[in-house]
Image 1 (cartoon, rainbow, N blue to C red):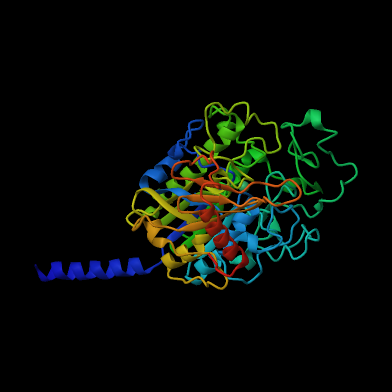
Image 2: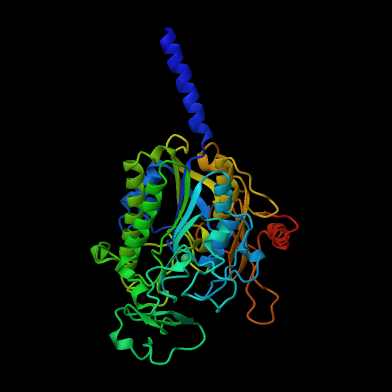
Amino acid sequence: MSVLRILAVVVATLLAGTVSAAPPNIIVIYADDIGYGDLGCYGGTGAKTPHVDRLAREGRRFTSGYCSSATCTPSRYSMLTGEYAFRRKGTGVLPGDAALIVEPGRATLPRLMRDAGLRTGVVGKWHLGIGSETGSQNWNGELSPGPFDVGFDESFILAATGDRVPCVYLENQKVFGLDPADPISVSYKAPFPGEPNGVDQRNSLTLDWSHGHNMAVVNGVGRIGYMKGGKAALWKDEDMADVFTRRAVDFIARHKERPFFLYFSTHDIHVPRVPHPRFVGKSAMGPRGDALVQFDWCVGEVLRTLDDLGLAENTLVIVSSDNGPVLDDGYKDQAVEALGDHKPAGPLKGGKYSLNEGGTRVPFLARWPGKVKPGESPAMICQVDLCATLGKLVGAKSDPAVSPDSRDLSPALLGETEVGRDHIIEHANGLAIRSGRWKLIPGTPGAAKNPQPTQLYDLDTDLGETTNISDRHPEIVVQLKGTLERIRSGRDVD
Ligand code: CA
């Protein structure tokens, strides 16, 4: 070997060492209400999702990936804090004027990333509250505490959900595009006299409601809660995916020279499902399917940006969803009627709000070329594990005292092993536990009012939770109830 050649090898080795020592970029694309069976790569047939399917092909597709709860707010809380939401009061689905529920200053996923040198940003749905007191926010000034206090350097969010007021974007904790001469007022208690509402205006709405969603009318759609003012700042539902995706892509491009962490929390496919006209009719399932196509486009734009900027190789991209699927969630958008043969939860039972597997077992994909081994994995992994897992990948250690339920599953994420969690808590209206092949829903068999039976299922032979075998395995019921109780009480954190 010539001296030059040796020198080249030494330089290459040094360079490789430098590159591997620097943390990667991390992007978490967090879908809303997309079920286990909704995406093509999980068997979905009603909408084409080529970009997500590409990510699945190039990365790892988990068949036992979980969110921690069957609704939005608690899953988001758990993912960002590493603590099961059921441990904290007030982490249920929040109104649009809720105070911030993440204790300002506590260790969080974005703070871990920032401490490791990554620039942190959140784009999209927040739904963790903002401000210090529920109902007392001044929407015309700086809203604090908020994403800054949770560890994000930058934020462009909607405060709660698309179906709740205020229907405006917040850029770095201020309403984006607000005309100071037209201030915003928000109330979750009483209507503002003279403002349109979804009951009186029902015949002129562009999307009719089926339950709730009949208070303020914004952009022809009834919402939960009342607001007035802020006309110039109101969002157009049709543009929301474009607005958020542009912001996400812009964040990536601005920080291409340094490591970054982007939490891209899409609105799709939550209600109201009002996709951009270019996606209307692009699925066989009406607006819910069209919103899936739109979500896939958002993912595609992120992947294309990474390719264009030469960042794909050094970026870990995770795609998951905050809870299982729901069809009619308050608007008459043909989700039930146009479903056809598509199975939103795939082979699983239940969906959003449910303790059955369809409530919390969701799509879970990870791609990091050269680092994450492509393929399918049965390893049980939960979003609550992202604090410890992603922390490990960037060289930061999560604090078990602050993130007690987060486990380092980086070997499973990378595909070095197919062993993940041995058990997981599932949270909806109550708690359930999956341990290996067994799934226990304790029920309330002794309750005086509306008692619910104890349910035990063998997921290896009965993934659809059709046959309750609790009578056949009383010893397993006792054992799992004990484990669940220990975790619930905090005596044995997960
Ligand atoms: Ca959700």
